[in-house]
Length: 275
Image (cartoon, rainbow, N blue to C red; front, side):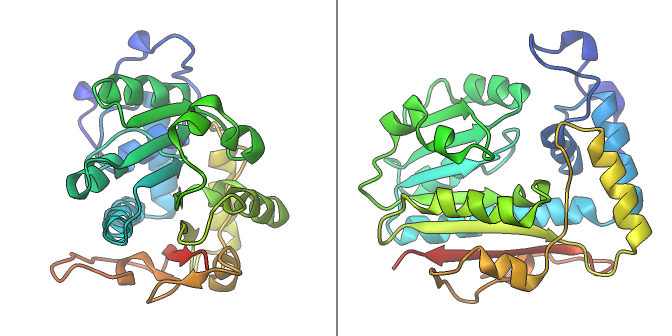
């Protein structure tokens, strides 16, 4: 799909990084046309693309949704962002979007992939208002209690928690709901929750099973699709920002937003505000 001659060499993998086990963060980087991925990531990503040919389009839609949501929140006065499952730095990251409008904005990026932290810390070394920490959303109490989170985020003030393209890596519905509830719990009135989630549409059971097999060999234990009602449930008790939970391209699109889609598989997203 991309020029392998310009991607990273497995022999140059940072200490603590396994280049031979596919990483969902590096696979996502590949979908976006990035170069921070290894052969194992590209092979796994291509297998998923065989099942979901429009996955690179969905990945780009997710990034565009991030930009529009962060722009909206910054204009609403939000100056703190907790981006969970941030992935590898690419163009138009949360801090770039927010600080372009409000330079005082503070951002904490969270991921459990060591290579994400290596790249993020190198890029963010000059930005004192941004942190990147290693933590797992499956242990939300430890994540929220992380020393750098507590030092950098003022939980007495409105905060935006971003869960973009990560909850579908938690196959158990009850666990996913508990994670979201725990991460919403410290939000004060005026805070926000942002979620995007895969919704596979008309995939057959065989296609879904094949996808699960591919992900079972990656850095995550599994993946699942959720319906509109299931994604909507993540916002229970919050005031949904118009237009509510919708396909990503329908959430406050730019007038020149390029939307191209083949097939019905895609992703849903929404923004909820704490009353």
